[in-house]
Length: 246
Image (cartoon, rainbow, N blue to C red):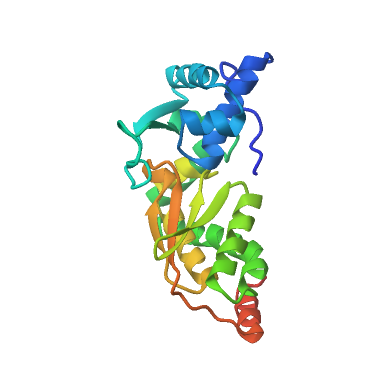
């Protein structure tokens, strides 16, 4: 699991044990996405009363917010309404260590204002290609879409995206529970577009972005059809690596 360091806001992280636990609760949601109080209590081995106390404090401080859980067949089996889930707010994400957002946004705005909109797109493509360059050797040698998704997910985790993958109906999903450049991407969606294109290229198939943190969603979610066929020969993989300069 990715380690993002302590929250920078001193009102969240203090030296006493209760506040360290609050940090763990916030970190669990940042790294794994929206979760209910029951899920968090089980995952962190905290009593229900204890987890609710920490969640109430984090909500009061604007670090988390509660939302209605998505209704599925599984949470319709029990009685009553589905439990609420807790998600990280934009302010909460700002408390974690990540890229120099303000400087990056200012630089990109400056480029765009100087008739350099094309430079923003070129920068986004260059950044995405850097992700591709680092991940390609791990991904391109895999001969099935499932293996490529797993390899890419592992790489994204190593880069701080706290990614997970799972089967979803007729396909697979990669969920990135943390985005180091979320606030920059909110201003410049070209970053998300270029990243999606690179994911598609590495997996060797069409993919669909269903949600992004930059757009206000809890996680970045990418859907990959299970029926996808990828290049399986070593020659094709080596060619792909060569063209990207890995």
